[in-house]
Length: 320
Ligand SMILES: Nc1ccn([C@@H]2O[C@H](COP(=O)(O)O)[C@@H](O)[C@H]2O)c(=O)n1
Ligand SMILES: O=P(O)(O)OC[C@H](O)CO
Image (cartoon, rainbow, N blue to C red):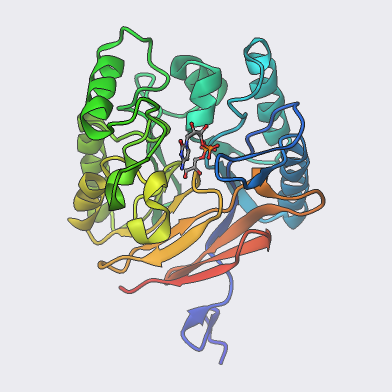
């Protein structure tokens, strides 16, 4: 039954707003290859996936913004081409008729220092941080986390964070190659150099934004390159301190969903507090002609991911 406020059987028919999503473009002008575990990677074709995503988002004529979940350019991109290639991908994103919100992935940091990326990606952050929040409507808040705030990537070699992160990895991972989880068991397999952590200052900031969102009665969507829930991703793809981040989030009731990239196969779970965790399928792993991008319709009581090809559509109903 359609009512005066547009509700059909209790569900609003029209979304409050919609936004585009894509992850792990990992473009490089190099021949196709494979991941360490043998999964094909189409480094040139991923740029075409991005082009089709932007065309599709523009054709929809209803998206308020789009979110790129990180890893713009692959680590195999020749380093003398890094800046040109990152700029090329950003230029393609900017053909979208609306704001693009980016986050930093490990492959971004293999190419350029974080300081340079924060500027190039026009992050709306304070004090040069790679984490920030924005509010597209009064009732919704987005929090974009920096998964490599505490990490062995992207900081100058002699930076105290780089030194501390390497020491941490040395204690947690016995392998000479710190990207190798060989011999490590269960969730400990996340202690790899291509992952990272949310630092203390960022955790305090997250807490303050969640408190403010609660006071404003806003619903919150968290975006992070690296997944935050073990049931949504492989152990090897998890944030080092996902438990600390989720402990902060679970103190509040405002967070409805967490989105991530990084684990290219994608994933989905609902945690013990009813929060939806959706890991987005990578553009890089689309064979020629196929796609992985989508858009999300946001309602008062749910969000719906409408995916294309490899990106699975997902209906996420809020538990409260
Ligand atoms: N099971 C694994 C997975 C990865 N590595 C190391 O990480 C590097 C990056 O892995 P990709 O899946 O992104 O290709 C890879 O080159 C290995 O050094 C590993 O040792 N064991
Ligand atoms: O960021 P990549 O491409 O090295 O891949 C990360 C893995 O998918 C995590 O398991």
